[in-house]
Image 1: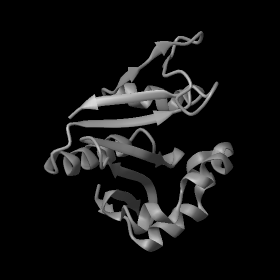
Image 2: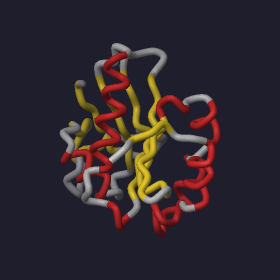
Image 3: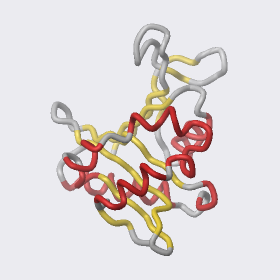
Amino acid sequence: MNINQMQLEDFFEIKQSLQQFWHERHQYFEPYHRPILFYEFGDTAYVIKEKGEVVAYLFGLLSQTIKTAYVHLIAVKSDCQKHGYGRSLYDHFIAFAKIRGYTKVKAITSPKNIVSVKFHQKIGMMLLGDVNPEGIPVVKDYAGPGEDRVVFEKEI
């Protein structure tokens, strides 16, 4: 498996195939795929390809105020899940961040995104906040009033 820095054509391919990554939620996630992530943060945007096609990607950001690396988006096509691609992308991004002196990695998701919650727990991320009625720790009002989020964090 090769992890490569995202190229412009990879970004456009991802934008055109969001449904293959996000299924029925693809329209929800479309606004999160801004060109700025490639143009201004491209050194922390990675892809894994099979047969020349992007099958997994990660958009990461490095905080300018604290030594925390942030995973903005990570996705693996359904038929390529369970191959370790998500974990490998995280490991690659964490290695990049550690070399630059970052000490934590962070990610955020909706409490309804159980697949993401389970994945992040599996790779050793801690869930911050208080347990909600569904038994998932959340940070209350993280995204605004009534908009709780699951906030993951890990020392690196």
